[in-house]
Length: 295
Image 1 (tube, rainbow, N blue to C red):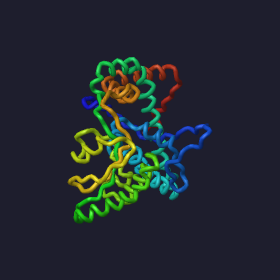
Image 2: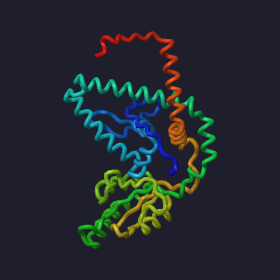
Image 3: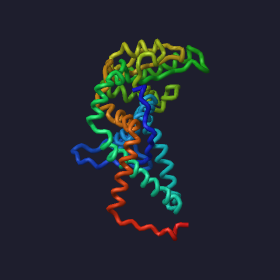
Image 4: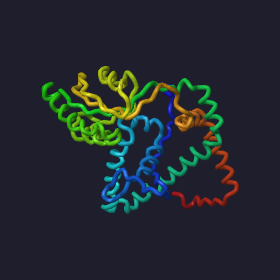
């Protein structure tokens, strides 16, 4: 929805995933000095982001990129707690203020906002602006690149051939195993900024990639690895995880995005509703102000 500006609300907070009583054990995506990060917790944190921030992560490696940043954040928080920094009075005051602010903001946005922007409003906007939610053909792709920067083409080719030979044995093991091995090989051997994310380039549309790379990626079936592809950046191995045909994003996928936009357009109505509710609460509550103690 490129033409729609996003609402200028940024809510900072952490959400804890509720424990799930299922027969199967909860999948673990990471451990940080004994602290367990489950798949459910990661999914909850990822969904809780504002749509525009999540879109940035989708371009930079999706949940894996977010997890890498979250681990760095948790390591710093663990260090702060270990040193007792969280026990400082000024830090506790700041944490309590942040908690109150997050609670107020979320209550206004989610509860009061739902009175201003209803589900019918969201559905109506979606139907009237479907063209804004059109999606081009896309592929979710990973790659391993052996760069020709700093070495000869022969050296770059030899390196990517070695990696390809190591992965060749897994071609018949199924797409899931091949994906796992490909991601690990990317972390160990690829030579670009998404190597640490297993070579994940996320969802990409035509026109966003090198023409030779793009031609190969869009011609491949999902779940298979390419041969060696030469581009101006070097030599690549490509793995296409999924493919999407051109279409329209479903309402469930863009509901929050539409809601944030409509709230930004009706911010005056939100403020008026907050003011009215505050006046009603003041009238029905016992509030005492001791002005002589305010200095």
